[in-house]
Amino acid sequence: MLPLIYHASYSQLALPLHHRFPQFKYQQLYQYLIDNQIANAEQFHQPSAVDRHWLNQIHSPDYVTQLLSLSLSSQAVRRMGLPLTPAVIERSLHSVSGTMQACDLAIQHGIALQLSGGYHHAHYDFGSGYCVFNDLIASAVHAKQSHDLSRVLIFDCDVHQGDGTATMSQQYPDVISCSIHCQQNFPARKQQSDIDIELPKGTQDSVYLDAIKQTLDLAIRFYQPELIIYDAGVDVHHDDDLGHFDISTQGIYQRDHLVLSTAKKLEIPIACVIGGGYSKQPQALSERHAQVFIAASTIW
Ligand SMILES: [Zn+2]
Image (cartoon, rainbow, N blue to C red; front, top):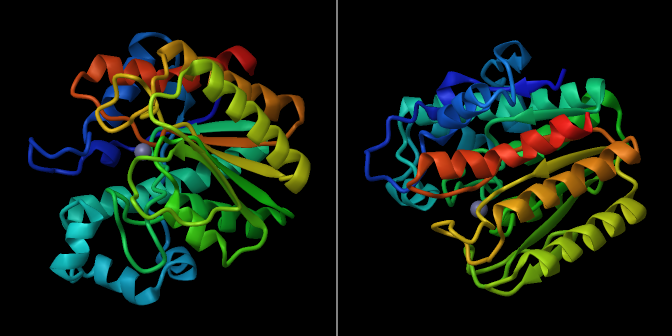
């Protein structure tokens, strides 16, 4: 039975209704998976809030204190893109813990999928692009320490570059950052990951899937990771509100299937997070995010 991770707080951000962050998509995806019998309620694990000590280990303790005491400067809050409220902090603490739990469960079962996560624009001492804490780095460091792993690969297929992951991973030589993203998109100033693959606006399925395959093969051959954290962002979709790629829903399925089956074949545990995806049509967005869950259930 595929282990899945979900917490009700993921969609409880209490944002103004016009806010661009798709606050309801987590709950909608949960419901979509149940309604379409892709998952059942028994598969879900519920994370608790992450312990502050883990946040202090990877983020600036001052930044952590300012967030938890709701005293971050208004300029820093603007950059983060989310209001500084107890609800936003609460869901961020659960999201980090959920990705950590996905890694633990992946090591145990070969795979686990988390219905949040992928907050790759969170940096050491500031948040940006709707990202508060960097759950990918926190989970890679946590898994490495708890399970004595030699190397962890963060394989980030969100359409935006994982700039926070890139800079933060430089502190951890055994955490490998790999980002495949659209060159002409947020963030304007790209950072240096261990591997960056920049593709142009309008990239279509075949070129994209070739790039994914070659990059994943290269990253695994070169770094020999003992865990992969896979950011399966769907903002690569041609109808996404913030992406500039031209990828079909079938292309997303093929990408997810390729990544998961490679990990399975090589017996590398893989923890998946859903990453970015932006649309005002909840059904369409849930369908895109569901592809990784469908792919996983056909392989495992
Ligand atoms: Zn994104």
